[in-house]
Image (cartoon, rainbow, N blue to C red; front, side, top):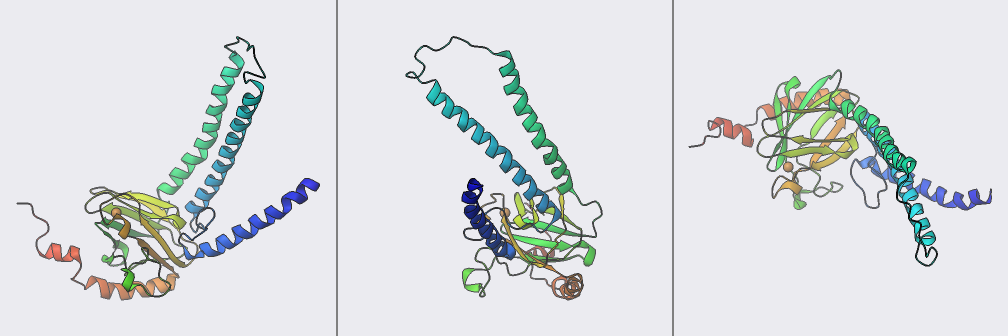
Length: 283
Ligand SMILES: [Cu+2]
């Protein structure tokens, strides 16, 4: 009873900290003094969080057990406490145990790990597709199901930021997707290997030139979410952030109509200019 009372105060404090951390995490980006992972907003991210918590318990128990064993050894078997050590070298039961138990722990970890890997791999019934292509150093987004238009999203410089826009994360254009929709996400690259990563979605996948990688998202909360290129891709690697706007289905439909007119007609995109000039030719 007494022990519980002693524990109650720090537990309450931890609870308050966790609550304020999750309130701050609503912004879909990392926050100073944040505890834990960013608030998950997709089924994959929720499962990733749960898996992370399971691993945290397992490694804490292992670390505590090994520390305890070492403390016992330090005190019980030092030269002063144990001047004439026994000459025992083998113990079959002990050796079988310290081989079998770690294998069992690894199997316990591997089963949910593989389940999650396959769950994150592809959407069973995707309602639409968005393709993200990494370039040195910006992302472009293609909407093949909505009229083939393409958007280039470039990081805002410090002097372009409006109040409330996060530095090194906000972009001039954003990838816009509807809420509560299974979205197939195709990730590729134009020049070198990049990686499209948004922590709140539980997505981090390489964009490889000449390859099409697939994953999916179903964002359950409207808002703006941020991520960064997560594969070292050159001097501008730190300056090609990802800004995702998740909007209602009706707002998305309205945005598509506007975007079709705006982006499809534009000819100042680097890719369009390149195509007009006959593409890249090596001589
Ligand atoms: Cu990159």
